[in-house]
Image 1 (cartoon, helix red, strand yellow):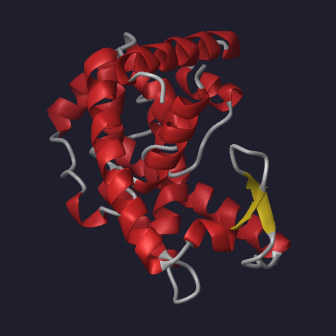
Image 2 (cartoon, one colour):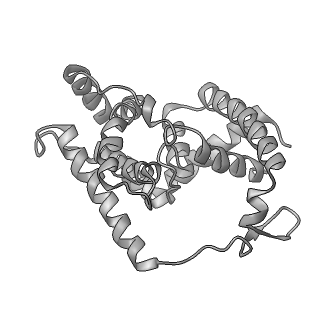
Length: 229
């Protein structure tokens, strides 16, 4: 029942959000507003958590630039660094760290460095004709199939843009703050990396089974709003 919703969310969350918009990251919060958000977050306010993450994305972009190179795209590093930022906001303890920015900077940098070390161990190559999955009919598809022709690319981009608009409107209209947080983490917004339920549970301080229930409830709401295709 939820298959197309999951595919839609996964696909669109990778191409939308903040990853490709680092020039439009919101400014850091004033100290007093940040303090209020941190206090609200400890009381379970998911909107406060989202706000803290969004207003510290500029810090991620700044740190990512230090590790960018012609062979390493800064947007990829921003995606990785945002995972560190999410962890930092979720685990920040004012009694142990002087400021959220200082603590987040360490977490962001650590996440990027861990990814770079893991990358060195892989050194694999991706071939355009190598199978990467199957389509709805069970036929193998390759990266070349996904890239398609120029005409297909333009059509797909336009279609994706319309789908994204509908999806974002549905997310804002029907999901609670916590459901939005779970869906964003599970399907890779704003970091571009989809997290396992156990990772989401650790970040939010809830059980994996509760994450599963929240995700299913959110997908049910999106399914009802968007209608089955």
